[in-house]
Amino acid sequence: MDRSRFAPTTSGPAHPGTLVAALLCWLDARSRGASIGLRLEDIDPTRCTSLRAHELRDALAWFGLDWDDESRQSDHLPAHERALDRLAAQHELYPCDCSRSEVKRVGLRAADGGYRYPGSCRAQPLPAAGWRSCDSALRFRLEPGWIAPPDESGLDLAQDPAAAMGDPVLRRRDGAVAYQLAVVVDDAEQAVTRIVRGRDLAPSTAIQVMLQRSLGLATPAYRHHLLLLEEQGGKFAKLHGAVGWRELREHYSPERLCGFLARVVGLTESTDETSPRELVADFDWARISRDDALIRWRDGELSCLGYRPAETEPGVS
Ligand SMILES: [Zn+2]
Image (cartoon, rainbow, N blue to C red; front, side, top):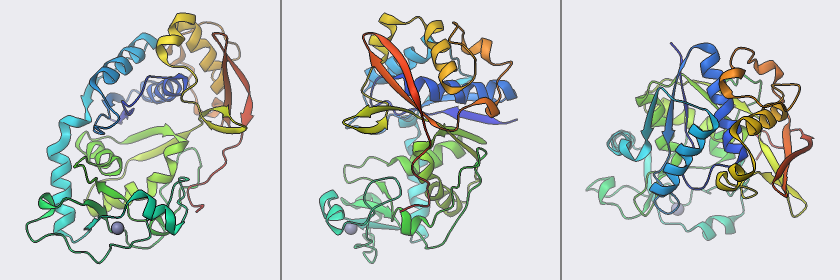
């Protein structure tokens, strides 16, 4: 049986984009009879709090989503450390003390819009006492080469991650395990076979597949979907700060919000009130918009201003 998961980072309140991502992931699983877990990604100590994790969970329940199981990424630390042990034994980890501004100064752009690490510290060995004794950040040595993970939505995920992204940090200087490693290890530990997530994460897929290969893990099926965007200073950005769940629920019932979001993504013809459960029977990816939706929050009301084709492809650097 297929197994899926919704894995939000617990660094802020649920916003309409979080709820759309959760809804699409949940509908995909429920309509296929797959099991689906909620995994709260709470391992960044500088951004995640237990209060935020609770609130995110409450928001998803309020919206009408349920899960076959729930977990917290912070409970999986021993598995993350075992993965680092293995990569260290395979000589695929190295320490790096470069600051963010040093990486930025070199000026190589990454496929995800950030800056690519130029590989300055690649020749540095780990301390003889092992990676645990190291105070530096630890990076994963990517082998050059193209890989092309399939995407069910037809998105081109082909990338040479070494050239497009550069060696990723797997354990930060403050000791926190980084997203790229945690997500790969947790998906394997939880026997996840399907990953449905927003297109903003598409540029990370190739690196995650490389990590799976190094760790001897299976690669799940991937499907990336549209994003909700908002206008910020003349540019379009992923809808984030516009409105959080606490404010949203003062103006919307879950059914009215679900009706609006279902219409925006293309699932329904009208914004009539509905619920995730009512949408399962007719769910079909063919009806979901491929273009990102432009959303505006004003005077307690959400509106959809139109659609925009996705701007970036993972291979672009
Ligand atoms: Zn470095």
